[in-house]
Image (cartoon, rainbow, N blue to C red):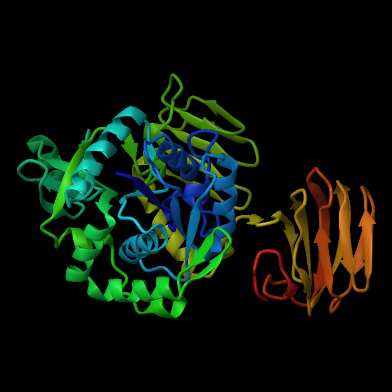
Length: 468
């Protein structure tokens, strides 16, 4: 049977703060090598037999970053990115993908549902597990992948195995004593959040156990819109869908749940400790990234993103440095980063939402300094890319080209700027920046004004379909 990959890439990975942020989530970060977790997921599915162009489900705010990473891979000539206008958990996302696949492929393929942010090191074992799951799905079963545990883990849900491939029950995250008992008994598997099921089988069971979700998502697909590789679910319809996980909405209720035992080198990299566990270590058990100097340090994770990080005398500690935040904690308290993230959200601090470097469909910008009435940014525009034709009410901008060539619309003028040339754009003036060259355009932007927020923008024309 044909395999329809459905990659769920809508999460934020807040347990890996400060590296993972709401607008730069875990799945697009290069945590374990030269590829992001999303890219390694796509690479795995590209190597499976009889695989259809992938469907990737993301939030609207991550659409261009996701598109860029898919195209960097070059593994698929065709693909579709389904855009969620709001978060409604995994059941609506999977149901919407199934309805979209049935409508646009006209077939009943096996959906292979994979989170975008998992690490799987044993590719052959993964392919074998997928083959077994696809066979079960072809028989009308709803297959889930159960990971063979190698230690008592309190951060995962568990699957209790019944006779043969049957699921006896799904179990919530246990305490340590219960997790140790599960490991000793040998009949419990970690719940991976990966699934395989035929489109028709899935939708039949969803109509029985979660009809409100099917009704809402059917309408969201029917009233959705195509924009190149993007397909937007209709927002008004999707608002009506309950927000449930696929486990709660379906898998815990159906009598067609089957489990495939999988020993595939799996980790959801759900914490800094989990990343330390799966990473290559030096002779003293340390994992380091970036410009790091260690003296008398053992069993620690030290990551430097932008500056030198030096540590002395640490044991079982993690130190994560980014341009605007540093997180330090004992390794066994890595899950407590969520307490910091929750405080940042309550206090409405930008460190929860964005990095100093923000990625846009045309390139990126990095905030170098921000004060009450001025801001300095470094802007990078990709070759051939252009920003929207826009205007600001409250700020003036001064652009200085560092390298490359800039084509600038400034009011009624269109000018070319080269290295060490500049232009000034007053508030209320329509303007546009474009890179007509074959190398990245780098420039420094100085903003001056009474209000410097990113929402002070009126767009008149945009290559990427963004509104004001």
